[in-house]
Image 1 (cartoon, rainbow, N blue to C red):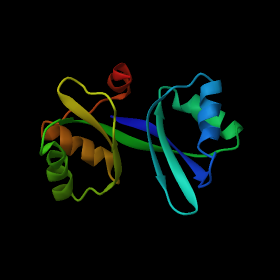
Image 2: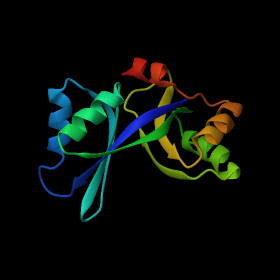
Image 3: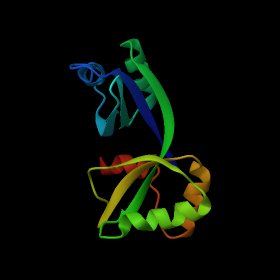
Length: 144
């Protein structure tokens, strides 16, 4: 039930973000969702694409440092308290959220959150047991 996410490490200077984006564009790879975080010295561009293996190879050939990680795509109710419904399940199960970001499209009346947790299999089971839907790669990519 996890998706593969690519994390690209960038120097925090003007123009550095364009390099991996141009490499992916030249290879015909569309970024479906992304998150950019920074510190004073470096940034991490996190992306989800349909063909993560091809994207990883393209980025590495372009000289980028790339890490692959597993994330969950969780459907949550898109109303006040929707986010709390995830936390109310993960926290009692001692599952740590490392980071999260929203996917820009909705699935019906639900929003989709991308979440990186320290125990993805345990998190998936707990979330599903409590009635939250997880999107596999096929369902996620259908939205894009």
